[in-house]
Length: 127
Image (cartoon, rainbow, N blue to C red; front, side, top):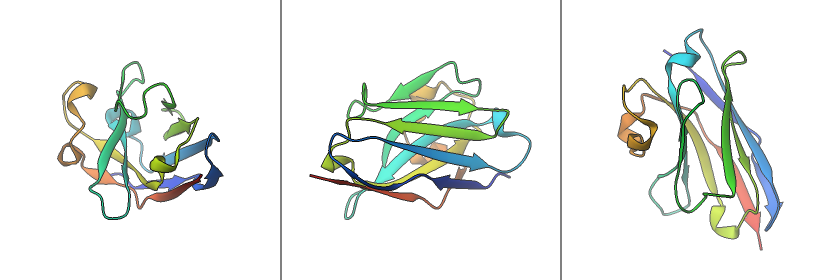
């Protein structure tokens, strides 16, 4: 079992940057594929990005490719999401999630693949 806690959300102007962090409890963090999802009001939760257990492979949604960057530090049990060139349409609650699935990260875009979820952190981008 793992508990996930996101932080780093806030209010930023369009074009600005934010860095989200997701800290995990437990000593098996490196055994999980980690992902970030987001959910805007009235919308379904959507995949943003995933990173492999070692951090060597990543997979991005087209909507954030080139603007967002995921990384992880297994020694610190933390995954990060660096968000740049933010747009108002990036406004959402951002969730990190952990998956035990034995599958390529490109196959982890569905929320059902993930076993554990954080509580989310709000990101608001003003125009």
